[in-house]
Length: 245
Length: 319
Image 1 (cartoon, each protein chain N blue to C red):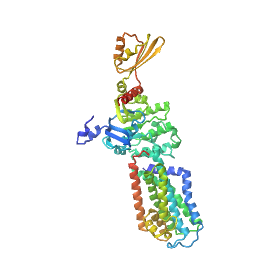
Image 2 (image 1 turned 45 degrees about the vertical axis):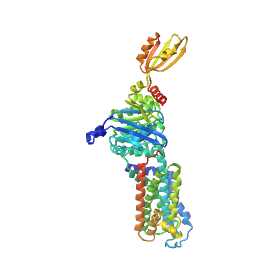
Image 3 (image 1 turned 45 degrees about the horizontal axis):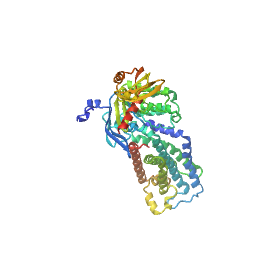
Image 4 (image 1 turned 120 degrees about the vertical axis):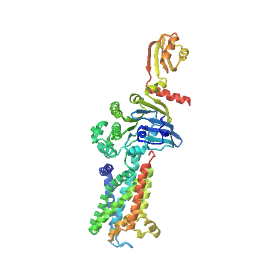
């Protein structure tokens, strides 16, 4: 199982094109969106645009890399029959999902760090050392939830359906979770839904730290719940996959 | 048929005597297509078995069911007296699928290392590589291999540990003649070590040459099951060729006993006769009884291929 995790990481690192775009995309997006913003606080958050978007773009970028990347690659691997071959080994379902999450985490960590570097150097975001570390680690660990979701989608759909489905999940989650614009700017009913989405809880980890506090237990519990749900679902789908993709 | 199912107490001894593979009345359909129809099948330890049939005969479906990659609509499949999944988890089964893609972006050695580490009783990597004849390509990337090389890598993955059963779906597809010979050499070593080997093929000479038991599959059912000699015999599998100095009396020849096929062609003033017979001795005896004097008489066995064609066409005709 550790060999598979190691191999998935090596393989992700070797895929230079994929690495480059996945890593470069979030900081670029951050600079485009937050680049022209002033330092006035966003109503209801107490954070300014540079700060707010640092967390949401780090989260958004990490999620893009792991969710879209994972689902498409897995669907492709199923089509090629590699997963069938893998199922003829003693590898348990959770081992497969763990390896995929590890591979995704390899991609998401540098992209998170780059967003933070861009925020610090270009936008002049200043935080305490513990805040930087807490945000980086929290955002990174939170990306595992979406990596697991990516694995599950890669299993639920196949072929041409993967991209539309993962895109739909992705945009809905990103928008409704408030990654694109601050939650407080959205209508109340959206906010009500949002509160229970993994994306909202995900970004909330970082914003809570930015505001100087610890992440809320509720947000962590929500993320953990989704993680268990997605990992369990993905592992189950891996074992149950009897379709000839 | 063994009657192990009737015993209620499952002792360790019983488990040892359980067939390696057991299909009990297994059926599987995909929509309206019946891929496997009421299949009964048992493989015993140490056998090398060829699953023979044309494309669409249900070979791959049968292997998928055997490996637990699909679940049967009716009936049951067991390996070593347990479920396919459990047998695989225990590291008893090595398999090479026809559609078994490989992980891309990794080197051959890394992939073999993975297969070895995932196996409960894996062999040393260098030994696996050498056995599959891929030591020289160990540092190549998996995506950059030829079809034949890929097949050998798949074989390495299937033989990465101490399996009791090895299942191969059309293993030599894409290999040239010499790598095919090397491949079967490696395969024979597996069989000599006492493993049960099951391979699907439509290369009939492979079944004839390598297997000690041949199961002919047609439309998802077992059409014939026996040694390749028996399969050939069942298909009326002796060929009798001779020349006559005079034009042949076709009607008289057709009346020969045990005859299954007859072709007569004119050659010079005489004729050349080709006969297929289920009992060559009786046919030749009757031939002399007609008062004919066959020249250049040859009696030879049919290749498995012709036997196979004969069985399947007989089956078609019976429908």
